Length: 68
Picture 1 (cartoon, rainbow, N blue to C red):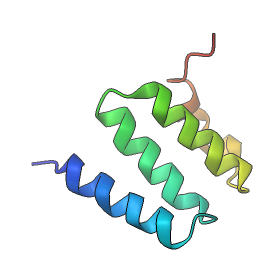
Picture 2: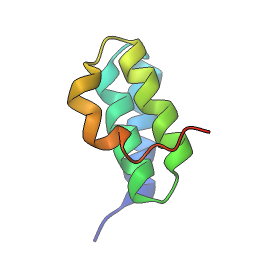
Picture 3: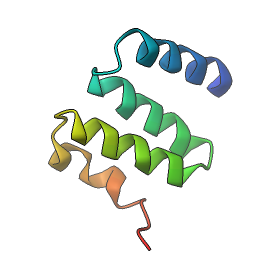
Picture 4: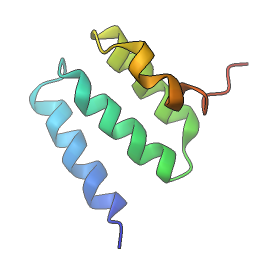
């Protein structure tokens, strides 16, 4: 059983502790994709990249982002 609510709470706590740790935003994005919130997920991917996470590593996930 996947516990998305608890996972999201945990990752939000991690972000509040260290908002410059890009992996937290990647993890949050994956949770948001799994809970059908692609717009929020893509915003978190962008935040991770802005903090230095390698965009090429996230290419598979960026294909789920619809830019209008």
